[in-house]
Image (cartoon, rainbow, N blue to C red; front, side, top):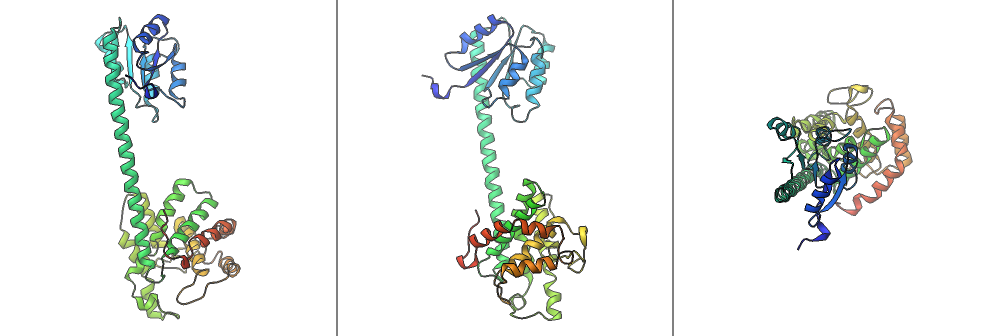
Length: 350
């Protein structure tokens, strides 16, 4: 017995009512049926919130022809996988070849044979179900791989922070700060997400810096600063060169987040807009979180003092456009600071 709760949805399109009636009578016991008498109605149904699972499409219709309707469906990424079967009296080899070339999965010629219609519909619905299941599996696998990659990136970021921060929550906080600042200056959601995922790698180069320097409770000597200033280049080398946007951005952030707007930063001495925007954004997020957090060499600054310092360094250390953005998102930043406080211990940012 057919499960009526999960019956496939078939769209029958023909400008001759008798042809529609015949196809409906053949299929209505097994499928939910919708009908259309012209191409425009077909496209409305296809682009609706409940598109058909399969389309039986006449070629010769008023207005948009079946061929043109098929072309438009196959040009739409969200609908092109819907199987289209042409049902037509045009039975030449050339006509059939054209239909298949523009994306139809099959060709049924008139006069219609009910067993043939049932068999073709059943076969192509099964193939469509298999295709959708494979797509679902690929999407899930891709999501799993992306999640794994993101977790590896975060853990590598924590590996660097564990050398001078007991919990490593700094990498979570500053990544969220950077994402908020990116939003405030008008960067799109996709770019914000890349920054959120890449920013935790900003100090991965610290893995190559001796603990005696990272954990020193006082100012570094000139020789120690020479070593410390190598960590951006080390980080870029650790991440390496990749075509992947996330890893490219992570490398760029690692390399440039200690550059200064006035050109006095390191390792390249870049200035102004020659510093990549992602590096400028992470510089603001990184320094601000460092100021309001306890470090081996200092107590936490009050937020007002930290903001005063950031404002004072606008146009010197920091891109002057980014400091108003920091102030704009400050309420959200303070909430993140509370949620990912170091005293709460290491927190997984899922």
